[in-house]
Image (cartoon, rainbow, N blue to C red; front, side, top):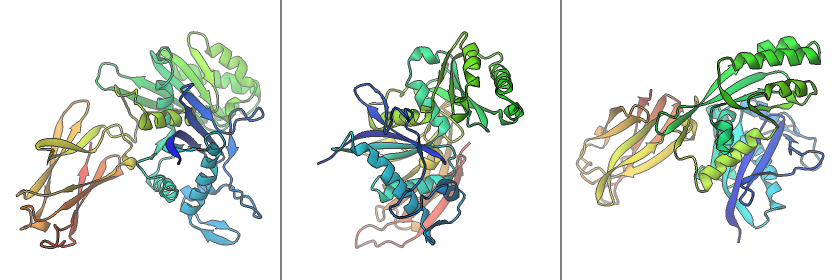
Length: 399
């Protein structure tokens, strides 16, 4: 019988994909499929079925809502993704034949709600539910990667340049150690326009990139710089990187995001080590959403949505039995200021049944980082109090 022990990170890219397993002995990600010819284990994001033409470029089409046609027939995008995930995750069987997935983190560049939902639906068809899967953006994977390195590498801010040969982005990790928990944020800048003028020759590209780096780092104190992306594989980078090493550490490689996803899987599925930190970016909640309930012979706060979690990851349901209340109160607590706001949910749709005569299913999910949708459903209470099938919603704006 297989054991659910594998902690996996998967970097799902339009052109290339990487898969890594957390190695408990080395305490580092282990790239699946790495060879001497392909040490970074970068593989084409392609579906190859026997007797059929390779299916390429399917991920951008899925993300944009376009049709996927295989052998002249339309294919369900979820099925296409599920097939690709099944074939990709099967790489682990060679080294871990008796183990199965405990936690999988998929990291992608774009985290639109529709695309993320397709990924979750595809994994669900493989039997990997949200209790064992998490989708993160590249920025979040970057934070996990840095925070799992030696502390000396992130005493101060840390910078990351991502260059695919066309687009150049800069991400700077910033910590505010004055607050508890310590917020870890990402500042982002797009230098694609500035880098595009360097198309003349290699030396020109190197000079322009060097100026961009010094511009981004002006009046900043950084411990470490990371360089990732296929655009940094050219020879012009060697001389520039040697200059940039002065006064700081510099690392170059193509496995940063997949390694970060693997560390995130370790954090979620193993013993956490970042409990004092709150990883933040534009997808992360900065407030808790809770409700007071009576459970285990005492009144306690039940967290419906937790700060530090991507908004698109949240879809939680709790069942409640009203005991004479005609309304419910939800509390939104800002984790930094500790300021609270209260929102009242009217139970009028089940009026007359709130004295332990109904069960309410209360579901919480988000349509964006600021908008929480609370759905309530009357589920009845046994044969004496059948359900009315009433469903009602309330939208809450989370600042």
